[in-house]
Length: 397
Image (cartoon, rainbow, N blue to C red; front, side, top):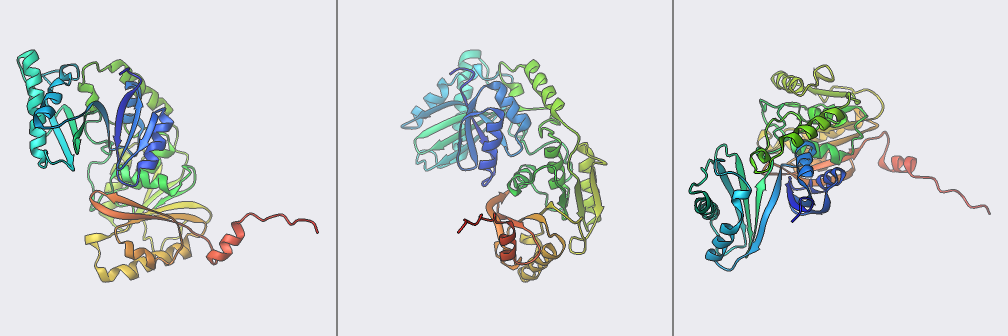
C-alpha cells in the first residue's frame, strides 16, 4: 500500500451518505462508494487531514489498517497479532477498542470481541517492547475500530478522535439540541444556495444558523478544534497539519448571506447567542425573539428550516392541529420561499397541506425522522406548475 491509495471510511448518519460523498469528491477523494451510514474512499494522509477539517457531514474518518477473513477464534487472534501495531502508534499511547459484529456465530458478544482484540494488541506490544499500552475507555489517545461481518473483519484507526460534530462552539445544548452534522446535512439537502436569506425560526440553541453561517463563509467546521486522533499516530506530521489548517483559515470569507435565528424561548435564545459568539458570528447572525406563527419574513425569496418539537415533547392529540398551523403559516407568510421541516412525527406531515418537493428519511441520534422540503408559492400547485413550466414554442401551421 502506498501513501496515495489508503482506504478510509467516513461515518455519517443514515440519509446523509450522498451529500458526504459529494463533499469527499470535492476534496479530491478517489474510488468513493456510499454504503449504509458510511462512505469508503481512497487517498493519502493529506486528504485524511483535509477531510477532518472540511467535511461537514462526517462523524468520524477511519483509516483502514487491515482486512482479513478468519475461520475460528484462534485464526482471528493470529491475524490481529500480525497487524504491525508498533508502526501504527507508540506503546505509551492509551487505547480503546470499539467492536461491532453482524451475522457472526463466533462473536455474538461485542464486549468479548473488544477484549479479545485488546489482548492481541497487548501481546503484540509485549512481544516487541516488553510493555503493553494502557486501556482508557473514557479519554483514549488512540481509538481502534473492529468491524466483523460473518467471517470477515476490517480493523481501522479513528483519525478524528472526538466525533466531528464537536465543532467547538456549542457548550450547552438547550432542551433538545440538533446534532451539528445532521443540521449541516439537512441544510445541504434543502438546496440552500448559501447566498439567499436563511431563516431559522425555531432556532433552539442555534445549530441551524451557525452551520449555515459556516457554510456561507466557507469556514471549515474543524477549524476550531485543536485535537484530532491522528495526532497520536506514528509518523504524524505537525508541520503538514499546521499548513493545511492555515490553508483552511485563509479560505474563510465574509458571511455573504443574511441569517436570522429566532425563537419564543428566551433561555434558548441566550444559549443561541452564546453559540453564535463562540463561532465568531456575533453581529453577523441576527438573533431575536419571534413567534414563528405571527412573524412575517421579508417578501421575496429565501429558505426557512424548521426543527419543531416532536416525540416526547408533544402529545399525540396535539399533532394534527400543530402541523396544520405550521402549514397555514408557511402558505400565508412565506410565499416565494423554500421550507424544510425535520420531524419524527411522519403522520404530522399530512396535516401540513403542502405538496412536498422532496422527502428524506434521516436519523436524529437513535430517532428515525423525516426531512421534507416544500416549495412555497401563491395560488394553487397547478397554477404554480403552469407558471414555472417552460413554454413550448408553437410550430408554424
